[in-house]
Length: 215
Figure 1 (cartoon, one colour):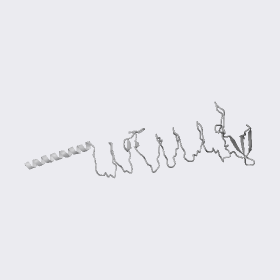
Figure 2 (cartoon, rainbow, N blue to C red; figure 1 turned 180 degrees about the vertical axis):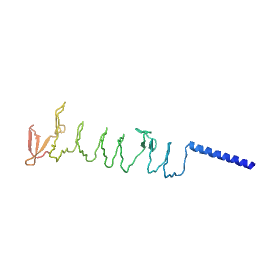
Figure 3 (cartoon, rainbow, N blue to C red; figure 1 turned 60 degrees about the vertical axis):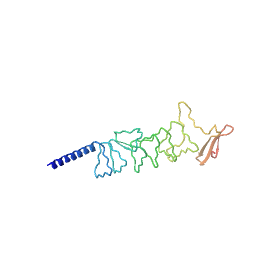
Figure 4 (cartoon, rainbow, N blue to C red; figure 1 turned 45 degrees about the vertical axis):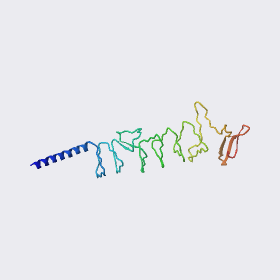
């Protein structure tokens, strides 16, 4: 009888210890040293931190934060945002309603937008710059060491360089450089003979036109 009583006490103490451990496990964080494999959905209501994660798909209604803590400029912790502390590489197509950067935006292939491309800084084009529509500028257009070629094959279009009327200045087209003593020359093609003529101001100050091309 004493043995049965002692066994009952030991059983109750062990059962109480199991309940206490279970309570502690559910009340605090749990560390699992091996892999977790699930064929269904793994749902987590609190914060989850992973050293590395591989998944066919992942969703979050709050946010996904990748990498160490950084400086978030427009990050929304409740709006389903994605933060990447270092580089992000996309092999497929990246679609975004809008994209902004405070540093450099690099595209190794084509970059397209149905809206527009806007920058407060400079834009550098290393290759050919092609515009299907019109190009306008509120400042000056400077071409150094190159040629402005205004070409069209449409018979209803009139190619040319136009200087429209201004409110506070004259409509001026300047040819030549006074500072560098470079004379101006206007080159034209006579339609009847398909030959070149050049017009310039000679040393006597007279406006002269003659056959030939500008140097």
